[in-house]
Image 1: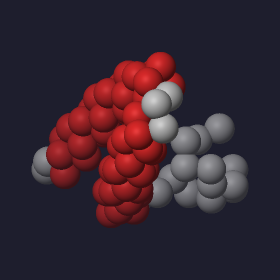
Image 2: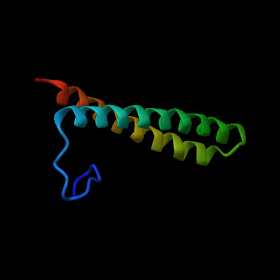
Image 3: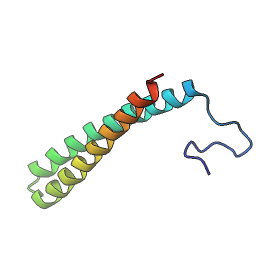
Amino acid sequence: PGYLLLPEEQDPPVPEEVLALLNYMLDHNRHHADELHDICHALEDEGKTEAAAALAEALHAFDHGNDKLEKALELAKQA
């Protein structure tokens, strides 16, 4: 099965669709990263330092994944 969750009988996405999907997913992930950052601060404010630290570690990995997604998008844009 494909990563785009398309029905099997559909053609693969055209390059413009691939770029649009990658761009959307990167923006979407960045929005979630911002939300997680806010949650991390809320946990700290509540004195839940271990939970905040665990979330900060996860957020670091999430940001790293977004950096790789951004690189993939930039490479996909090249002719």
